[in-house]
Image 1 (tube, rainbow, N blue to C red):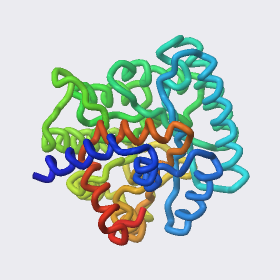
Image 2 (spheres, one colour):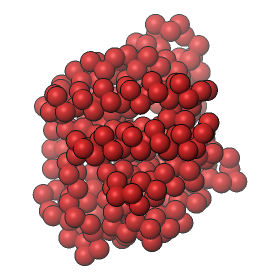
Image 3 (cartoon, rainbow, N blue to C red):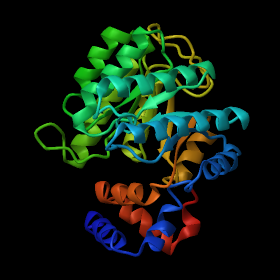
Length: 325
C-alpha cells in the first residue's frame, strides 16, 4: 500500500510544472550555484555533519562538456579549502568522458584526483548504471597504482557481482580499499540484480560484512533502518564504534578527515532526524550535497528511479516540521 502511494505521488509530481518540482527539490538539492552548496554546508556543519559535494550532470555527449565539469570541480576544491569545510568530492565518471573516450576520461579524472590530493581531499567515484561498473572500478585501480590513494568507488548491494568485486578489490588494494556501499538507485535488469526489497537489504548487509572483514574503509550510505541497524551491529562485532580507533588487525592507517574505519552517509534532505541521532551518538555522518544547473533533471531522475521518495515528498509537503533536512 505504501509503495503504491509513493508511486502515485511520484507520477503526479513529475507531471507538475517546473516551479513545483523546484519547490520539492530545494530540500534535496543545495541550489544551482556553488555558493548555494557552500551556504548549506556552513549551516549543517553546526550539526556535526561533514560532506561530499556533487556537481549535477553526468553522461555527456562530447568532451568539451567534460571540460566544464573539470573546471567546476576545481572551483569546488578551492571553495572547500578557502571556507575550511570538512568536505570531499563525489564525481560521475561519465561526466568526465569515460563513455566517450576512456583514455581522455581517465586523464580528466586523474587531473582532478591529483589536485584534490594536494589539498588532502578525497574523491569518491559515484557508481552509475551497469554499463560503467567495470570501468569505474578500473579507474580506481589504475589511480592507486600511480600512488593516488585518495580515491575510492561506490558499490551497489543490489548487483549480483558486488561481493565478487569486493573480493577482487581486496586482492588488489588490501586495506587501502575505500568504499561507499549503497543499495543502488538504478533499476538494473533482473538477470544481473536483485529486485525484491528484502533481497536487496540482505545483499547490502552481506557487502557491509565483507568490507569490514577485509579491513576496508566502509561508508554506509543508506536511509533504511534495517541496513543502518545491521551496520551498527556489524561494527560492534568488530569492536568498532564512535571514538574507538579502528581495532581491526588488517585495517589500513587512519584516513585524513575520515572516521575510525567507517562512517554513515545520507542524501541531503533525507532522514535528517536519523542522521542527527547517529551524529549525537558519536558516529561520523556525511551528507551528500548536490548542486548545479541540472537540478531539474537530477530531481526527476531521482523521483523516477526511486519511487519510495514519494512518501517523503508527501510528508515534506503536508508536515514539513516533522523532518528537517
